[in-house]
Image 1 (tube, rainbow, N blue to C red):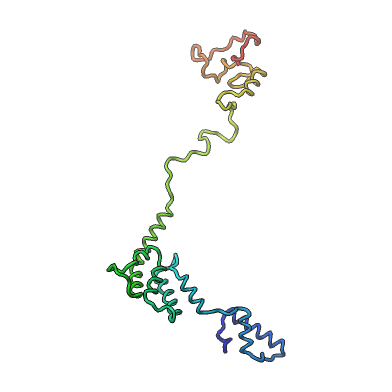
Image 2 (cartoon, one colour):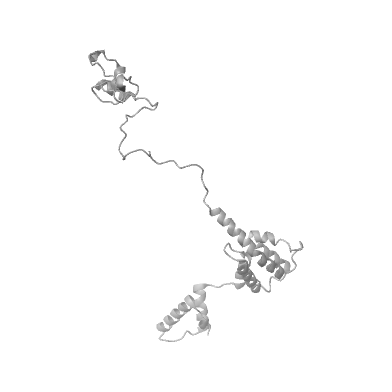
Length: 239
């Protein structure tokens, strides 16, 4: 009869153990079925003190983050029912109920609408239930404002040059940290008699087509070098 009240895992456990015993003993029943039943369940699930379970529930009773005040009221009433012989003082019930409320709602329920202490738990529960929609709306607005993205002033910088074509290397020579030609490039130009501007042979810097500072002759064309001066008479600046 006791096993008929079992459900789910406990019932499956008891059925397997009971059938295994009968198979091992030629189909015979345990000599003391009640004791066998008790020992089987205690060995697998242990003993549970219901009073301690009720007190643990009472001590941890709080209004959850996603819980409504109506659901909290149901849990609180059930806890009072379980501890009906232990929790009887009305003020103890009131303080416990108020302490478990959500923060904003708890502040609204510090005193009764008349400013006096709460005298009855039912009055407090009714007042909290009436105030809950307003608190719930306030919480929803607070969450919405906290989830809105923060706008950053100014424009984002482009990751690359807008006028760049392709992904190839720049045709301009590398410069040193000061923005001038590096010593390495200068020595190379001098050794190979290259132009200091475009780094190509057969002309010097003052006659380079890329020299923006070159003096222009008539018609706006760059004056050409006479080419009559020997190479050994050219200075470093010519390149």
